[in-house]
Image (cartoon, rainbow over all chains, first blue to last red; front, side, top):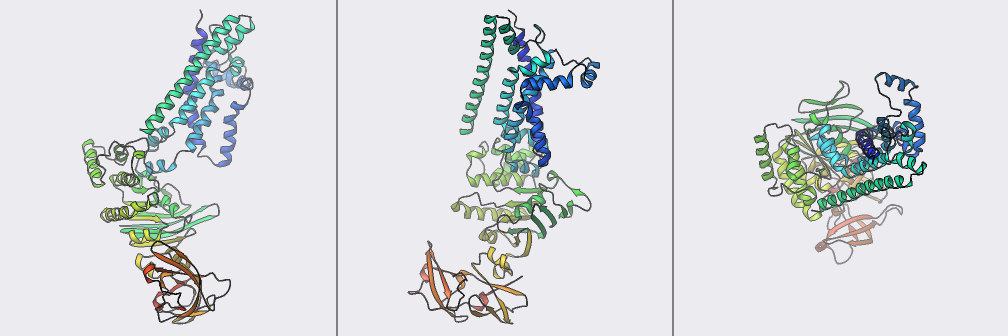
Amino acid sequence: MDWYPLFNSLRIAAISCVLVFFTGIFFAYYAAKLPRTVKGILDVILTLPMVLPPTVCGYFLLLIFGVKRPLGMFLLRFGVKLVMTWYGGVLAAAVVAFPLMYRTARGAFESFDRNLAYAGQTLGLSNAWIFWRVRMPACRQGILAGTVLAFARALGEYGATSMLIGYTPGRTATISTTVYQLWRTNDEKGAFFWVMVNLAISTVVLLTVNMLEARQKKAVKA
Amino acid sequence: MSLHVDIRKRLGSFRLDVNLTADNGVTGLLGASGCGKSMTLKCIAGIEKPDEGRIELDGTVLFDSAAHINLPPQKRRVGYLFQNYALFPNMTVRQNILCGLNREKDRAAKETRLREMLRLMQLEGLENHRPAQLSGGQQQRTALARILVSDPRLLLLDEPFSALDGHLRDSLKIELRDLLTRFGHEVLMVTHDRSEAYNMSRMIAVMDRGRLLCVKPTKELFADPGSVQAAILTGCKNTIPARRADARRVEIPDWGVTFETKQEVREGLCAVGIRAHYFSPDARQNRFPVRFVEEMEEPFEFILRFRYAGQKEDSPPIWWRLPKDKRPQSFPAELGVAPANVLLLYE
């Protein structure tokens, strides 16, 4: 039994989830401070990957990072190749999952009571302290929801991943590309197995979220 | 020890233009909602940046557009009590107050000052409660404790009683007034409630649509508001356009009467104000025939409306307010006003 697709999928989803966590929060936080027109344009660009077909995102990624494109050639000089490698999958998954984190975090930040931050400032607390100790805990629920959504989306990414890193058993295969590949080659049993693996992971993720939410509600009530 | 504020700021069509000096003690900032009171506080605290001007506190320049000085709020040492208190919901009372002690690095000293403040603000035993578990009064005391331990040189209070139930308000007013007397620095208190301003402040600054109308000692302001806006904000129910007749008389065309005044009437008079409880059937001066219009019963007083016999049709009825036990058997045929009670209002 080759467990590589599971390992690779979890690895890609976890790393891209961490990337998306920080970049999503960063953009959500700073976009709120920009002038309205700039914010509107930036918002459209940052949200596009969510509404575009993932294959189109993959196409754009190939346009930018393809080995014959300027940026791809430049990166290749440092030995970084994002096409047909597992870490290219991290990029693909991150790009597709990013808007989910960005938009949920932005929603959470927008409903944050600004007076809390102002009060912290007038008390002499640094902006970084206020961000991590006041704003983030207050927005915990939204941030957590965004992170889980991003993780689940990254785990299930297919379109952009198959465009950018294709399917190479033992190298770039993920659960979703494996399911397609096995189905295509009439290995119905194999495909079904990986479908069940995927289903199990997704169920565990959702159960965890529900449990966390229930615990938080209880904590608030107490 | 004093605060000098001279700032201007534009926000869309709204213009803020405030020039205010406050000395030791509580200064009330009285104005209708949306007149720029809170914006003024935010500019002083450094949360909002004025377009131009200067803010100076006890000789330290906090903001000076000409000299490109704009201290961040962290360095201004200005305490700000928010309308909703802005306690950090994820922290206990103890942790909230410790936030105000972030400049103190010595642990023992921190603990001592925390204990001291908990005792002073009667918060002992509530250290491990979260804000959501506290009553409105406890929340206010926690927020004040958090501010006072940070040792501010100026205290800004934004509608400090608006989030409290009516029956709590009076005892908290007395509590806060006593605390502020001991504070020893300037206090600016924003309010739209005239009795709050009267209870708490030594001086009152009246704001209207982004401008500062006047700054006067509290009692003086209520005795002689000086302008229509200030008269309305101090609770004067009847303000009416008027003309100077001579040095001691004003003519009120809408009411069809001419009143004698105690104060000298200067040129530029545009209106007079008569507080609703100043009318009296016993007053012998400024007596004119009146006609009853309608009444409304309050718990402890009557609010009546009447018209003068010679009053213009389109002029609204006049408010009269009197305690229940003072109510005459039948509505009087004439009402008078003591000349000292005719408030002279200028442009």
